[in-house]
Amino acid sequence: MKFSIQPALPEDAPIILSLIRELAEFERLLDQVTATEAQLREQLFERRAAEVVLARAGTEVAGFALFFHNFSTFLARPGLYLEDLYVRPSFRGQGCGAALLRYLARLAVERGCGRFEWSVLNWNQRAIDFYERLGAKPLDEWTTYRVSGDALVRLAQS
Amino acid sequence: MKFSIQPALPEDAPIILSLIRELAEFERLLDQVTATEAQLREQLFERRAAEVVLARAGTEVAGFALFFHNFSTFLARPGLYLEDLYVRPSFRGQGCGAALLRYLARLAVERGCGRFEWSVLNWNQRAIDFYERLGAKPLDEWTTYRVSGDALVRLAQS
Image (tube, rainbow over all chains, first blue to last red; front, side):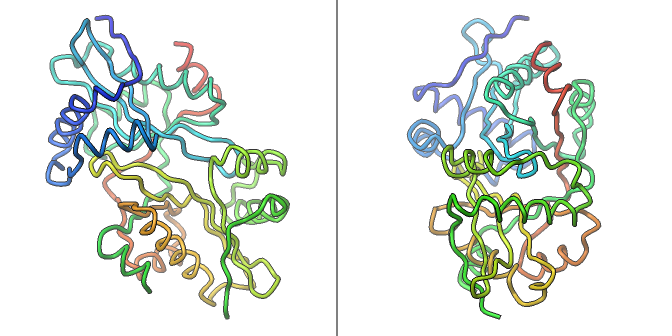
């Protein structure tokens, strides 16, 4: 199937929120979603805190990717970090995920990025196999730590 | 010891590069550093691709942190991502790392961030113990994948 990939527009906020909720359900994390359409519109299209591209098959939305730039200190160059990649079930296995990743890899090269990164849930073997076929390498030797919610406020006030 | 923490200025580029090289040496990754002073000046102070704060004891630079904003899709809010934290050996064990982390936690709260994150090398048990005492939790269930160099160009051209 042929997928067309384009940057999302402000009027796409409702479909972006639907896709985020579908992704969260797949990741068994739906209880963590508090995002609203208004917040997405503000953060993505006014503050430009992240960017979204949508993949369409004809007029139907098949999937999306949300990304932003990180930074490599060692290279003193930005990188491209893919926060979320999601393809709707009925469009899977038809090259939509690969098309989104290729689009972002091209964008990373055009923008002078030294690397293109994303994270995957360790139980998602289908995704892991797919990423490794595309040439991605796991950063096994690193673990990410997070402070959020009350712990973040406590650390800020300590 | 009392540490004062302040945003770095363009004239700090040489000391920032020295600190990046010291950190890379500690991480056994010095061969990966290609950053130059001119690149750091451009990326940090013209393009604002990342931010740096310096910790000083009197007039001596004791350590630094380099960070940028990431984005939580589920929260539709930015996060603060600490890319590098480094304290010079002669200033360790005196609260400099904790002072830098507290400063960034305050900044994260002030800027409306939903979370504050960083990554640690799995063999750096001293750092892991320190982060867990501050309330950070490991995101054990995730692995980061990276495409860079020739593999990135290949993916972009595929």
